[in-house]
Image (cartoon, rainbow, N blue to C red):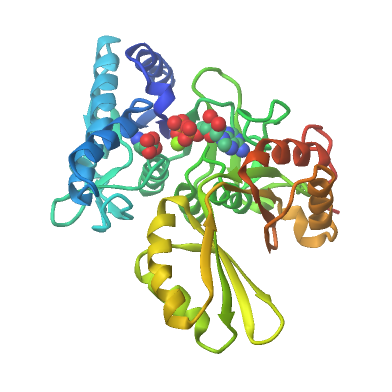
Amino acid sequence: MALIVQKFGGTSVGSTEKIKNVAKRVLRYQQQGHQMVVVLSAMSGQTDKLLGFAADMQRLPDLRETDMLLATGEQITIALLAMAIKEAGSDAVSLLGDQVRIITDAMHTKARIREIETELIKKHLDAGRVVVVAGFQGVTTEGDLTTLGRGGSDTTAVALAAALKADSCEIYTDVEGVYTTDPNICAEARKIDMITYDEMLELASLGAKVLEIRSVGLAKRYKVPLHVRSTFSENEGTWVVEEDRLMESMLVSGITYSRKEARITIRNVPDQPGVASKIFLPISNAGVLVDMIIQNTREGQMTDITFTVLRADYLRTMEILKETVKDIGAESVNGDESIAKVSIVGVGMRNHSGIATTMFQVMAHEGINIMMISTSEIKVSCIIAEKYTELAVRTLHTAFALDKSKQPVEE
Ligand code: ADP
Ligand code: ASP
Ligand code: MG
């Protein structure tokens, strides 16, 4: 008998019919003798709909009240699944984050889990019930409801699997697993059978939303093997595992893209000590995260500084910089919201040279201008014009032979 945590995403619970199908799958596992904890998202589109209501009420919606509102989405699906399971003749109980006591900090709309009490869940499991837990939400020690950030149900599932020392954690979604790139924009994308936590962390942080990045970090830390698979088939999906379980490392394991960033350039900045901190301190004080930064040296005593921020923070950042530009005596600030970040990721890149060059050649051949570049041991990212996103992803996918099942492997 195993203890299994299963998480079903928004499209998997998008209608009452789909929830009935989830009930069937869960019960099949239970009938095999397993103890089942099920984590659900809200129905697809529901969280966005609720955010739309909030925006109608307040120009900048209050974050505590936003969490009160968003937490209702998952309450609907968990209650419905518990009913479906009971209708099928078994027993189930639905629990909200505050009933389980998923304790978080008070950073409303992006709270982090501090601890999870497991007593109540274990009591229900021992009584033979399927325990259905609301994903994406928790509660502060003060009793305020919180949410964990978009896509946060993945994090709830992995955190529960770690706290309960579950035997496995299955993430059910609308694709067959983790692919070499987003299968919804590249028909040649291939399902990956096994991937390391580190590669998955890079893929997630660079835009592959199939797993929320914090869930991958938690899985790595607590050694929770993840199985990402489809709600709509019985096929094996993708296993996310530790590196030593992989016999061969792919040179490049995936291509990602993100359209969530914007680029900002400050021109003719006096090239003096302290200028970078004068630019970036007010930005970070406003809670804005800066991703890539490039400083160009120019003739004389002047330099240009270019960097990227999330598009959601773009206007706020430009406001702040208008003041900064005057303050430091720079010439101007301008920006571009229609950019995309396209990246190649793979642990095999550590010991190989020339991979970045191949990426640049591919872009050049397609006439795609690279505006910024950033590299790490296991990834290369380029900022390009947004309109070339699909073209770049597809040509890189082919250039690195990701559409072929036999790929170059690390020696
Ligand atoms: P859920 O609602 O089940 O959490 P998400 O929409 O959050 O599902 O994540 C699944 C989606 O992630 C897929 O439909 C796919 O378009 C997208 N995606 C992006 N990159 C990848 C990738 N490398 N592999 C698989 N899916 C990806
Ligand atoms: N319902 C939340 C969202 O849409 C959490 C999740 O689906 O994981 O972001
Ligand atoms: Mg998701």
